[in-house]
Image 1 (cartoon, rainbow, N blue to C red):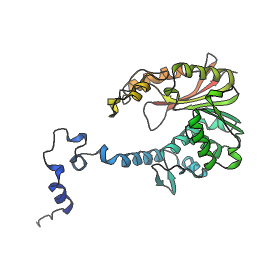
Image 2: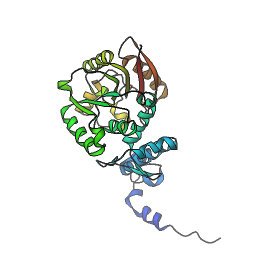
Image 3: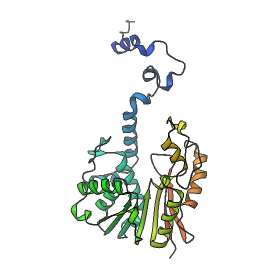
Image 4: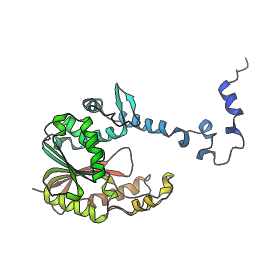
Length: 292
């Protein structure tokens, strides 16, 4: 049998510092980890994020994923993305696609939406691009965030759709009716009293409420975070402040039930549909409807 030729790559690796004095906890991120274990979060963070985008894109039906091709200017603002089936995709717009698919039956039949805390506006951008029947889209947010969403949406949506958007400061929030009220990923960052005030508004002025937020909190060390002042503030914010193991299905299911109770706008409401949302295990989504 012929001698198996040496690998130039491994010859180089074995001579490097990676294989000198390998610690017993090398899986935690030592340089050797990259070669003899399956991952190294310190060096492969971007690759992991892009792989997450790939698998989330891969979870959609082809016809549903193609809806994203109807949304122009998705790459405005930059960010990590992948080229998948002749489209550039990122995590934000894949999550927006999940949201509109969840709400599709109502989005095709209503004409007004109010979104509390729209961030830079990716959900608004997605809905107005896919549902021309929407006549009015109100965004209620902090003044600084409104500046961002106003600028972003002015650059991304068609002019006829931009005219449908009303940007309203929380400091001048006048109660106005909207068939569907949306809150995505922000009520867990508010004070308890602020969330209750918004739920009271929804009870008084809306027919449907879509909520996509966390079912609880987790200890920073669980995900390798360093505890900070902002972290402590986050742990105390929102309605659901119990800490849980976000990687345990049994714990998640228990807290999801509490989510449906706490985020209901009032006694006259029922859960029309609910389910997990990807890619984060501790997020949950629900559509609440008001009894006629």
